[in-house]
Length: 479
Ligand code: 4AD
Ligand code: MG
Image (tube, rainbow, N blue to C red; front, side, top):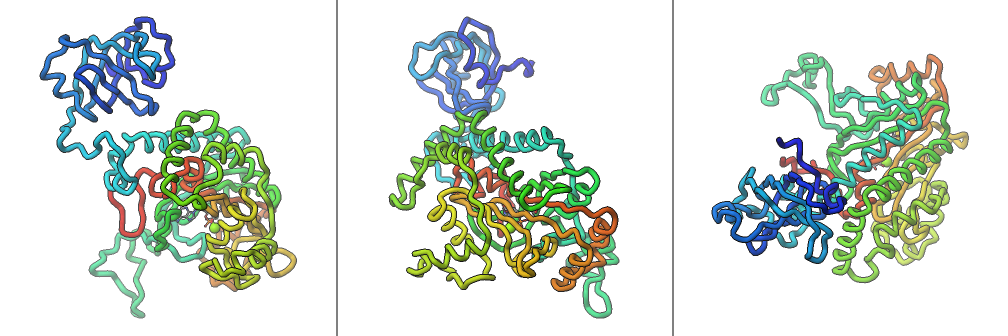
């Protein structure tokens, strides 16, 4: 019975011709005991359901309240009203689920994003989150399409890991040891021999190291899965649990890597622009409204859809880290001491305000920075001949900053071992990673795209908590 329902998105494209249809969804509004605006999540557009006066029982009409779930049978007719081509003249209405209008938290009015975060279990039923999550879905689909079309193998890397791929120590430990009675060694350290895996384990921060193993057999692979970082950053761009896409390619150098990353980002943005225009138009309007509250200089110069079209039409700027430092040093911002973190010269790590200056004020488009000082990058990056830099690349976009981090990998065993020693990365835990350099090592490269950050970029949502269904951030794991 339920399978016969028509999606409202498809129904709205029909030519009205008295077709008999069955629709199901949730009530957005109900006016004059006659007009139901019904939404089923397939589009922000509501279906107008018309109830003939006097034909339906009063008890039933009382139960048609905001967010009640309905099954409506009826016929598709041209709508005399403005704003819609067609409507449904109901022949029967069945209440599948009541919704108490006194208690339902999502009244049909404007709510703040902060408030909606507290009722994240219901926020999908708003237009904003409807659009955001349909775009998120489209981007995920486009990612698989992009790689599948190019012969990449989708690889599932483990969630539980014994290594820290980034070496940054931002790990969530995984243990079954009793927290109130942790077994200890004689020297006072935790005795992980008694733990589930008989060793210390954590949630993965990245699938890259395992993806490298795959790339050296399949050539091109990618991962797309959740990653976890216990970094205590309460910002609009950081999550403790986020999704990452990590392609890894054999026979690739840094240049190939940058080319692929740029093509990839443009491909998935184009997919959303082509397939989700209605949602992106809605989000463009939403952002415009939101920005009206900001002073002029804080507003985006381009509207959301315009920005996406612009990104598709222009090449990303490519500069070296050294050039980036020169630009920042020479900038008026620096001279007028407007940066919170001063520019201290070559060797410093770039803060997000510096990255955003480069993309938003200086280049006004996405920028790829390459060849960073080895001291501020991970152990696995390929060392350049200058002895100072590594073949790393970050992609920065306006409004967000870094969305991609990647590099050519160090494929030379001796160089890799030397770097691991210098950086105190224990070789014994990564014997398998080193083995790849022993048996048929090849130049290879890869990168990681933060999925929520690209969703933010495409939807124009300012806070990363609003582009993932149930955000995990310091102090918050509700739902
Ligand atoms: O730059 P990151 O740390 O690089 C890696 O993890 C590499 N293993 C990737 C690779 O080469 N295969 O992270 C990659 C991207 C960042 O550019 C950012 O977009 C996103 O992941 N990211 C986060 N997104 C949300 N919340 C966080 N806490 C994030 N940390 C990184
Ligand atoms: Mg990074």
